[in-house]
Length: 99
Image (cartoon, rainbow, N blue to C red; front, side, top):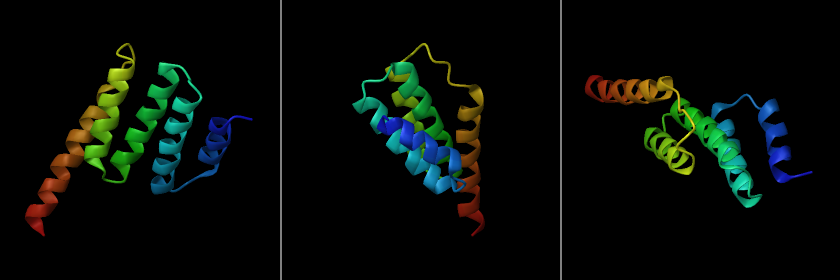
């Protein structure tokens, strides 16, 4: 069984957003090592970006989105991820003002 298959199994069983972000990072690395398709790697990057947003790693999420677009420009990253990125950035800046 491939490493990516083992990681996908762990992802299915995981509940923690922090751990899921780490698992998707591992999945992306494994897919690159296994010479998987650009589409498959980009999907893993997209998932990793979502969990980076959920764990307030905004710069990381933005980097992952851009990497995915660069890898496979045909992939349509949904508008909601960009809206969420903007929302989380604005929300985190507002929290700084109210501390």
